[in-house]
Image 1 (cartoon, helix red, strand yellow):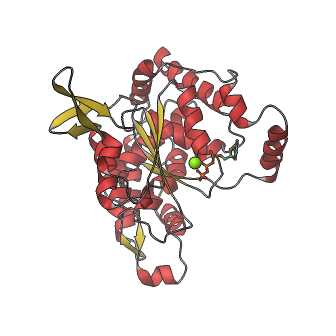
Image 2: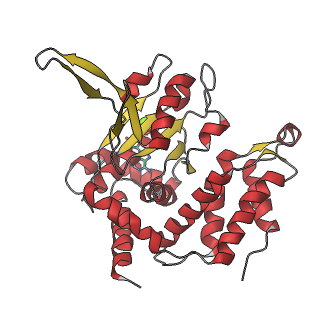
Length: 321
Ligand SMILES: Nc1ncnc2c1ncn2[C@@H]1O[C@H](COP(=O)(O)OP(=O)(O)OP(=O)(O)O)[C@@H](O)[C@H]1O
Ligand SMILES: [Mg+2]
């Protein structure tokens, strides 16, 4: 085991610890967020209002020393409201860039399905290319640029659901459910005291575990986590099986293979290991694959869930020894 790898694991463990000072429970959600951040990818967050989606991303930004901004998507939001605009500066007799909210490290794109396709595309392009082009000039986004996009699962009316092809740009989907009774009781008690989650975040009690400029080098240590060829083969077979399964109309593309590999490696690091196990891959299969599959209508009508299909595929493919 090399020294570098210890740093990655230490930072991950410390980040979990600091986030837990604010976010009650939701350990699985925190881990998946860390996986998206440390692999330099993006995540979809799904959850009913008030489950602390915003607070989670704000807290992660604070703990990892990164900038944070939030865009509320609305039907009249324009691409330039995301990327920014060049404004003529009379004194200097030249155009200067007024950067949009996309120029940050952690971007919360709230209710992404409320804006029309053209505006969604501006964000999706920035996610893919990690640059923004304004008036033919290309600007590079910060190194830790990570998008967390929420979709409102209840109100579909008057919205523009993300096309499947665009959901593929998100490494994984994080589902946030309501807290359990014990967690909700803790939340209630802390709300009555002076230690509400928000107050805790701003109180100085929550430490940053790294500086933004040091994060890329620590993230790169994920490259030292090994994956045996047999396991890579297993993972490839899993993704390919989604394309031929009887109930699936559209399966997961090759981006899913890359995402599942990267996510499994980060999951191994979170578990304190230097190597990926079949269980890492199994645990990440649902979050990585679910949002990329479309079922055939007849199976959907029968009430078959995508998560169920993934479980069946996991049972069908033989795990290498
Ligand atoms: N697990 C939790 N840990 C800490 N605070 C929580 C938790 N769940 C809910 N809360 C509290 O719930 C409130 C709502 O949080 P937040 O605004 O982040 O929710 P949201 O999911 O972004 O909601 P919306 O969908 O309306 O934007 C916050 O005041 C937060 O303190
Ligand atoms: Mg919110």
